[in-house]
Length: 90
Image (cartoon, rainbow, N blue to C red; front, side, top):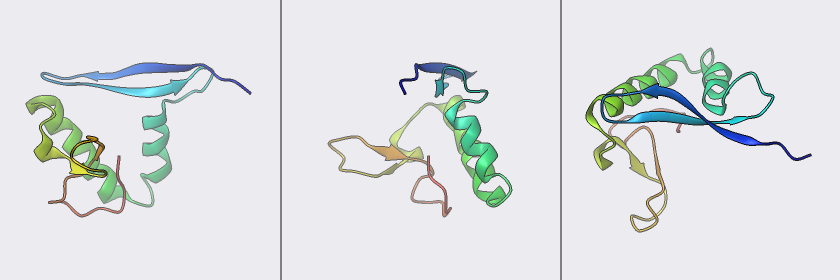
């Protein structure tokens, strides 16, 4: 089954805008589904990720806000940074 994938604008920040994949016909974007899935079991982690996204929207997507998940060369990064401890990552 093929589904069309859309890119949905979630929020327009001062320095960064946030987007999420959204499959056509689905009620929620993938980011919204992530929040809904984990908000009850990991409320502190979800709160920390949303807080970090708010900072990134305001200040920009500097490397210091992320952790490297691959090599520095491939630029695969995740939230939160290494300075924060959470069970969840984006």
